[in-house]
Length: 296
Image (cartoon, rainbow, N blue to C red; front, side, top):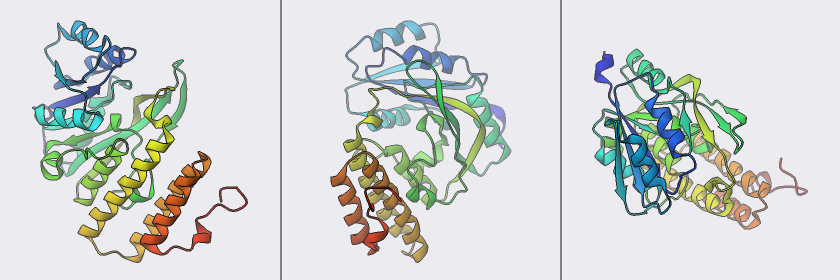
């Protein structure tokens, strides 16, 4: 069984032009009750005062290391962090989110309780620009990778995920072709390779919602949702036979994409989702297409 001293976290924080929230994020890491960690802040070519704020904040804390690189996007920054990390467990945190002080403590206890666990995630709270809690996100996962193909967000946020180095060594880096849903594709890849997940009940992550969030860009989200789905199907078919059960989960995912695009008035996206589902699985179109302008 692992001992507490054997768990050394590498906290990986990608940041790009986030002078508004980066200090809050870093302070939440510095205040962790679990002290055995390093924190790698990957500055992805920021052009505002982000770099200066980070340097002033971390100058007296050798655990926090600033790494500067050209702007290449979130996945590239996370990959750079993993490639630079010294820890045996990686913890991801987006720069506009922040943790409760017991975040890493809860994760360490999950790993210590079961040596077969390779990835942890937790409940989250979303907050608006005024700091008010809007939503509580809690979706336990039963280690069925098919759930990750039928649901858009079984794991509520990448800021709640930690994983052992062995996962990275086995499945590699984040997919650079995805500009969103890259984390969903990565967790799915871990699950399909047989790594075990564990869920922490305590909400230890605050997810910042704001008007500039990438999640507000519906067209980009749709494109990457479908691309992620296609990648998942390819991986799934490479690891198991395409059974009726697989089709059922894929059908649920296509319906979810259709529902999202219809609610967002993305009618071209709705058509794309329907045609993709029909091409892949010969679905009954009437079971997917909205009727009377309303979602079923």
